[in-house]
Image 1 (cartoon, protein in one colour):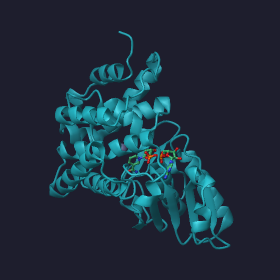
Image 2: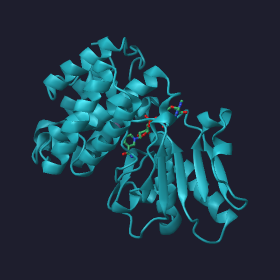
Image 3: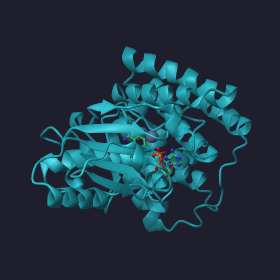
Length: 323
Ligand code: NAD
Ligand code: ZN
């Protein structure tokens, strides 16, 4: 077994609670920054150096960052090459190693999604593939008890935004709709009515299911550029973007603002400074890579509507660029 565990748990008794045997590997992942393809490749090399056979399971214990690394390691182990080779849609050819996800933050839906989001040398993009799905997951809300309030909110809003983008999109079908509706109710309950971590964990799972049957949308297409250029974590990047998307998701953006207020959250401002032209163009390139989410959000003719100029204006607003 290969356990990949968030570095937060170094200071806890997690190691003692797991049934680790002598030939197993127990690896901590530093999640200060979002996961990279290089980290995945390093883990794969370390596992191959440790054993000549495919491990019984790759077990990820942590938030979206750890779960994504565990999924990607399982994919690259059996497919060879580098994680970068598989960033995109349906590029994985062979089944992955058996993989188990144990989330310790709720919201990303990575525990159930068919993607594993990684930052490479040129882009942040997911390995979107049927082989990226976990074989097994364990949902235990007690593991969320130590998540700091801000992080709980930002990652929780990732779930809320997944559902908004699914339910407002053109790819919507009955599965996706049913999961998104229920997860949105749970999010309202958690962030407006004192709902529990168990509610949030189920919301994350259902939000992830909703995305499996549809796609994300405008917020994710823009937030990847922000995370890539400024190393802002996904949940916060989404919140910073979503706050300015009244034009695309009006009623949900209003509701998001109520949630911010009710949870006493003030989004950080002035994170970005003045953005140079090269960085801005790179961010726009990254957004335009998100073809499926943009097709979902805006329809098949999205390219005529969502031009570089429109994206630049949105980024200027989100990052508070001087006029
Ligand atoms: P995270 O995994 O990046 O962790 C955020 C912080 O929380 C870290 O500092 C970590 O140490 C800490 N932490 C984790 N568990 C904790 C616990 N129980 N108690 C205290 N602290 C804890 O956060 P996240 O928001 O869950 O994941 C973000 C990542 O997920 C991004 O890389 C994003 O791109 C990815 N993502 C993936 C998908 C997918 O479908 N694969 C979907 C959305 C987001
Ligand atoms: Zn997300």
